[in-house]
Image 1 (cartoon, helix red, strand yellow):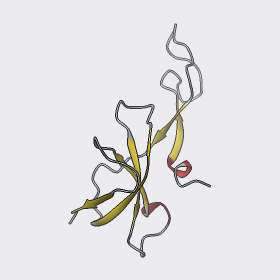
Image 2 (tube, one colour):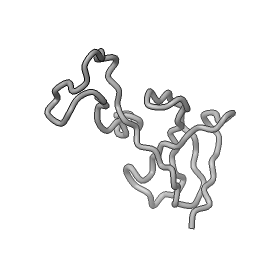
Image 3 (spheres, one colour):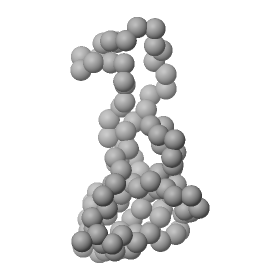
Image 4 (cartoon, one colour):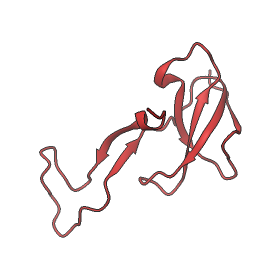
Length: 99
């Protein structure tokens, strides 16, 4: 399984309630979207490698999948989505200075 697939948490249906019924009239279904959880705080210090830049249908900005270089991190704590800045490319290094 690709590391990016694990972060596609749940489908986003803004016009459906908890029972799956349409609650807003005159709105089409549109393309099914999935929510990608982003790490806005970035508390873990260290160097992260940018794996790839992806399109996020929920926002106008692109997001970057980054991997931690810390060998102690396992599973989902090693992979994170962050907002991609202008000029960020795959293979770049991103450093976080969290306390």
